[in-house]
Length: 456
Image 1 (cartoon, helix red, strand yellow):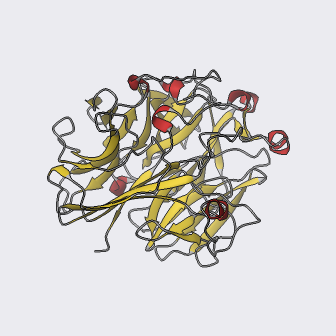
Image 2 (cartoon, one colour):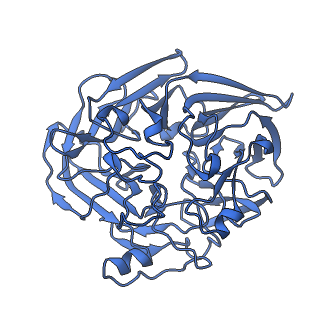
């Protein structure tokens, strides 16, 4: 991927919305998988925009519905922001927009309080979708969301509350918020941040919200100049982690080495220590561009709340991204973690030279399972040209262990020129897929998704 021509190769957008029923399947879909696997990602309507950027393409959600051992349907739909609706010859959807900020969320899609929500960060509203992925409109949680939202909220599996840390280009604060299981904002805390840090992700433990105040900030100079991306690396500011008590308002800060984090694996408390596992980059967004010489590794921070010191440990030096755990262990100790192995990161976050014919091995064609208790890992190759992204864990109906479940991911099949939904056993990670659902279309390499189970 080139930063000047980002939408090529595996990122090439699709130009049609597709609906297909009764999808062909190899293997057997477990009958207990009743719900929808959804994934969001940038899929621009136009490729001739000189401001094109991988982070700025209009969002498109791809989904497969599973029920009773069948793959009932596949759909892909653009999220209808007002601009997208008009481009498609449709009327804009109703809904409250925040301070004129409007964007077709392209980063994540989740289910919460009976809603399906497409998400993006930097002050923009979520958009609600129907079960069939049609756009309802911007969502403000029944008038309780007073500002924008985030791409990476964390669901507490014990309380059912949705926690988030939001930022926006012109805010001089970051905002911690909690949304109840019924879909209402019940708590907000504005944390002063006059340097306007970019907090793409955060971590959650039983007692704390862990904030990442890293060298990437919002540049008002770039914003005033109309730059498509306004993030800037300011290493002289240093970097720090913050512990905000879930029920408090004061943050305790701890210095760390400068770095960048897109994604958290998980975090938990171990006595007086807070353990945070992340995908860490040495640097990012240098010169207002992505930096291809910065390899992402699986790292661990251990915050000693007594001494005030932070220990940094490399858990795995292989390039990898899109980490995840069993959702049932979020905010608590985890043994296992999953990620996509990334063979050549410069094709994702590369220099400004154009790359025309990217080789098949330039994209993620393998997944990795970490066993942090054993200090080991397993890699599952998917085959040359079978690019994939984030694996999503779904537990069995009555799990007997943390890894008793399935991993779901879209995988491109180069022989068909289309994609599959591959269902793996998390325990038999390198064995044959449990099932492969053959989709009628290609799913471009994108960002994040979720399994949204049917109501019990």
